[in-house]
Length: 219
Length: 253
Image (cartoon, each protein chain N blue to C red):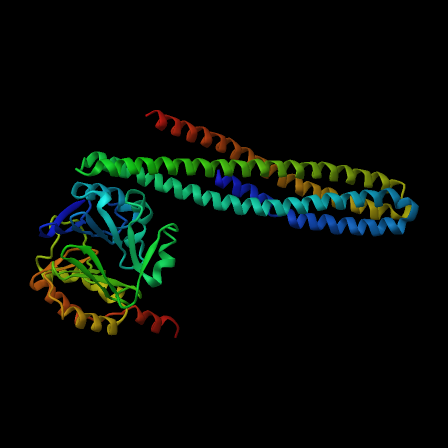
């Protein structure tokens, strides 16, 4: 699950650069639209909308950094808990095997401690799954930005047709934007696949954890 | 894991736990000790987390974990104290954990919730009750820069941490050195390389030479008793230590 999260974060690692490229492109397009006067009015409106989309990407970039830090911390907690559970399980087995005169109270405390650790592990997994859900939500937003940016690129290309001497300039803007959109799309596809895989594993881990705690509770 | 009683006088006992066949091969072998005086027990260097399962099983064959009121950590190494958070889960909540002052912040990386009692540079005394008034002796730089040994004047046992340690190629059934000159080969490389300071070694030799020692109990390998204690001290006194320094001299020419 952590590896999937890492893959998603890795996919998102180019988001800041892509957002900056889009921002610069929109500024240049707005300048060109200003020079085009009345023929550039629609393009100007489209570039202003592009900057709003860029701001959304910036927010997502910031959110993702926070999610990444929390995921690292929760994974560390989960791995530590898993390691401790393994040792506590082994200790209980050793106590059962040795049957020492004083093993009873130690065994009870180990079993209790093991359950506490199991609950802490479940909580860490729950938080990780919540992070993955947040990441999935951010991925969907980037998907919306991709779709909107694609439409903007198409509309700028349409506007370019009637822009006379500014046609080449507007068409260049539209093509550059499409290239960025394609890069964003690839990023989203990679991130979405990783997030889907992490979500499935998270759900499986949560089911296993709850079931383990329930069966220990019954025993 | 083997356990032998190395001293007993009424309720006052020293137990040594080691030569563990369940130990994973890549984990260095360690010997853990417990000093018992009736209802008060101190674990000395209780070991790394990987030996915890067999150690707790061995301990509970001999004593109740409720009676463990002290844990002593001679220095900061993981084979000494990484099982601390696991021990704290089975021992009483008011257990006292003695640790070198300079390593308390570092040992907390193993167990951030542990309440550590800092041992000052000059050492201290730990009173377990009865005749067991233990002297915590400074043994800095041997090998750790904040390092302590324990002397039990009643039992005449000196716990020496890594001093006297041996890297044995295979597990032994015996826990004491029986042929000192043969045993040297298992100690020599370790002491030459791990022990960093000849000045500290000399001061330690002078210090322990003033003690009456029947048994010298290191954290790795075999224990020394009788004349082998003096043999070890004499051998160590003349050993060339700090040999790693040579690599610094030769690293850049």
